[in-house]
Image (cartoon, rainbow, N blue to C red; front, side, top):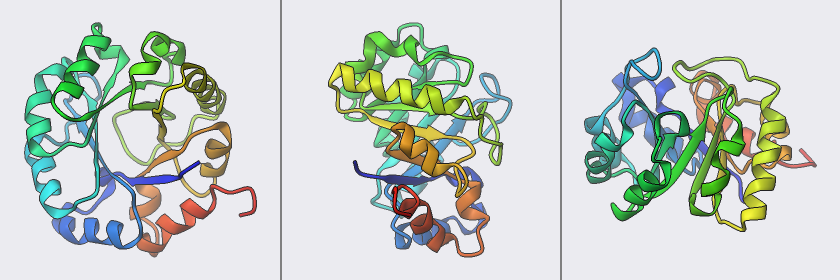
Length: 221
């Protein structure tokens, strides 16, 4: 199973964004994770289409755009135009989830769905086969540098079982509290894609930290 590391620029130094993204590339990052927050669905306000467009100019890596917003469909066209590779939306804000996933795909992007810690992964059971990405939040979204919620491990394992049963090709991503002390257990539970912000950008050697995290996704590490 491939292992993908997706540094979250929420923890990057925006005064040095070009250098930070170049560092991620040099360290072997697979994706760049962009957290979009609207100050309503989550208690923080972050990036919009302009930042996605800027990051797109700085890298050829896939841009993994996580929409923590109400009415996410309002952003699909502008984010696709800005250069998003994947758009991932919360089941909690998407009462017409299937329609919204199909719209993301129509715009030429990969379509993903997210569940918060209090939302059972079973809420996605009827769209499993339609997903390109399933994101399990292992913290409550809104801020970086939070502690991993231990009960997430069982939830990740259930998500893996459900994806396998649906015979889909979706990636299983985990976001929140991912670092040296948690990533191996999350990998063992069945995840293949790991969002890491604080663990990478606050490390003494952020470039090397990406490789450290990847190597921990092994029984022999």
